[in-house]
Amino acid sequence: MDSIQPRLIGISGGSGSGKTYITQMVAALLPDRPLVLSLDRYYKGLPPNEQSPSDYNFDHPDALDFSLLKKNLNELTEKGSTCPPEYCFQSHKRKASSEIVHAAPVIIVEGIHTFADEQLSCLFEKKIFISTSSDVRFIRRIRRDLATRGRTIDSIIEQYENTVRPMYLQYIEPTRQRADLIVDNDHDPDIVASRIAAYILDGTRF
Image (cartoon, rainbow, N blue to C red; front, side, top):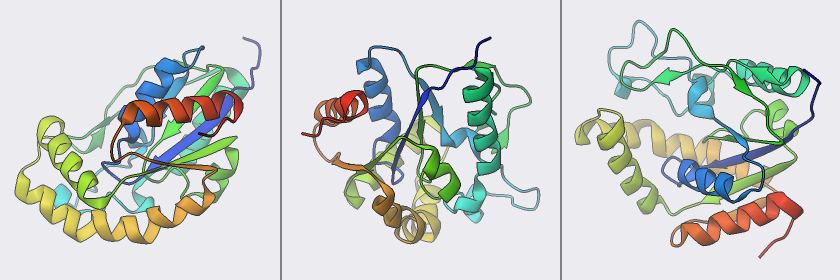
């Protein structure tokens, strides 16, 4: 397969900011369907000595395998395909197998720590930060974790107080400074997605 040079786009924001939902909407608006890689794929997994997800800091950058992500992005740009990991939020482990993905003209990487690693951040042609108020993010996180991650209200609140909020303030909020575009997502996601799509396509800001 001929080597291709896709455009790499990074999207970041706090947990519950709407990154995944907005990214899906953006992908549908772009003329050539992009490849979307969620940073959630790259969790290292719950260590053997940790019995509960609430006891482990998933919101620290060290919980993510940035080296593997950079390797996968290099394979996509140089070879046109790669095999990214799959992560299970019920078992808190990587799945035994994963599927091959192929490069597209645009590759979007989205996650809370997309800009935390300086080398990774430098790979992105455009960096977008989705800003959402803390109460909205917390409510969205509760709904998501109850519906899709097999969590209880008590465990969600405990994790939010112990790691999610402090890690956001320490590691995620400061990466706004690396963003080329910051958009507010408290109200109308359609407008947010349209703004981001326009910015990716031709740099338009509105």
